[in-house]
View (spheres, helix red, strand yellow):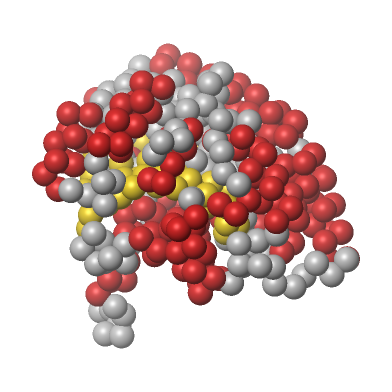
Length: 380
Ligand code: PMP
């Protein structure tokens, strides 16, 4: 029985299905795990050196709440190269994308406020909204991962939501925002009183030539917030550095909730990310090329085995359908783990729209990918 001290809201959420499954995997020491969103590259050397230098020169005190201006200026420059314009005053450095998301939601949600959340999607959105007393509305996708606009527009008309969350490149499907969907969304956001929270933590891993974001429109800029970070970009998940971009008034609210939550993020990680943006973009390009090779390998193997799946266009996940096996995604993953010692995440961990799918992370070495796909083939 749970403790009576716990709040109803905390009792209403569960630990993430991704973590739950990766915890199960630890009971099988010989298993290959393709469960986590952790790139297998080391942090680039120049970032390590910058962090060591920051310690040695005693850059170890609190920074301002929003973080060091040097890094915020570099982020502003970097985003400009993607057609996204924010000044350093419109950027706040956070403890990873996770705290960025929570600080944004905390600054915006009143109890009962309705929030549109993609289904399937990264589980933190729903849990954050529930913790704050918001109410969830799910929108869905077509088979090709484009947004089901008829469903979405109907939902907006009927429910009058306050916020819409977008996640591109997408965890768990690997979809990116197409130009067509971006433009259609623009018209919807323009017409309705809805604020977009655009989670672009995988932006540096977009495999397409053009990158599309809702933050590229000037005329709806006051209705768009970007959450992003360096965990995936520089393979520095444990160093906990991300950022949020928003126009002035909204940013003031976000900085308030961020300040009472964490004061500021680690000064050392801030200097590390600063060196990363200044000197390690070629490392990011290298990682991206490697992920494309792995994506192609995993995609082709799955197709050859008869799985139905779309080619991912970003991030490092693929989301094949397992519907033809007539097992729930949880049962499929349990069997895969027990019988072949390969761990992947049940699609149901990402919401009801993920049932009938599995998420394979290909942020693992080619050897691990080759061996695990060989085992899956043998099981089938
Ligand atoms: N958004 C998405 C879509 C993610 O997949 C993740 C991490 N898996 C995050 C946010 C949080 O990132 P961070 O590690 O920087 O907190």
